[in-house]
Length: 130
Image (cartoon, rainbow, N blue to C red; front, top):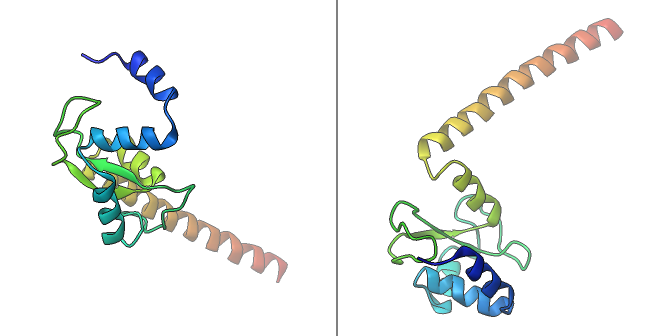
């Protein structure tokens, strides 16, 4: 079993390029594979559609239920490239579509409720000042 502390110390001593290559090895991907994925996705996040940049770089998304080892992947569970925000978001929802849909429903419901509430307050305010 790999020791996370030793792995982290090792990672800190690597150049950014070496870290990136190691991360790709973790998913059994080459730089060419990621380049092709980026091109297929038109250099955009597969969820939000934001363009990848030096500050918003692509993150390899994979199915966490496929390979149980944290530091290794079979490569067959790679889904797409995401921006960091989207990758963290679906990770926060534990890669569960049910939770993602529930969150979307929650946002829609509250957006509609708040919009209705704001419209009422605006109308009341206009009537008072009218």
